[in-house]
Length: 211
Image (cartoon, rainbow, N blue to C red; front, top):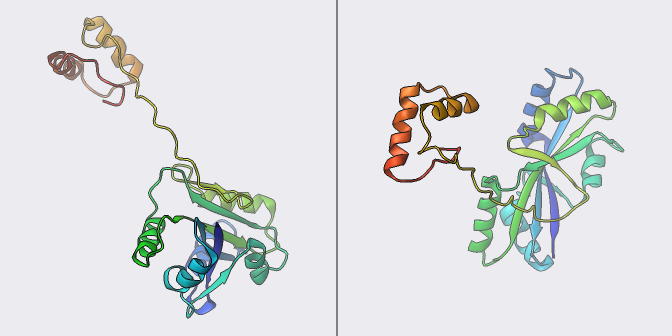
């Protein structure tokens, strides 16, 4: 079975929400933000979750746990539509996921996949324009994306693609090297490029674009 948890810190311990609100007020002075950690747990039975929930995912002293996003939102800003979730891009290492999975193994709960993210909930009177501004600020497209809360699935890792090779590099003349130099906008001197060509000649292969 699969399960989803939304974990919020109680008010006296909710440092992340306080810090995020202060940071976002540089964009929207009237904003109030609550932050939740989301855990998507795959291949874990209900009895296993009950056994490990308060030992791995939740601290009963400092945390409040919700099973549904609507409950998490309404407990803070009733009927607010101003919220979104984020997650790491597929293939990005996530320390929180890795640590949780290792803890589960130590408790003899194996073969569970953990995928975490963050839920951001905002005050009801935030405008759509301001919400988009905040979303653009909080989501770094290099490492994260908006999470679809209507789905419960393990994100597929992107397939590795072959790095293109610069064909003919080791056999070309100086004019060909100058063309390579222009096409790739290299910051090297031409003498350096000739040196690189000599190296790849010595190992009898063309370099990849990454190299």
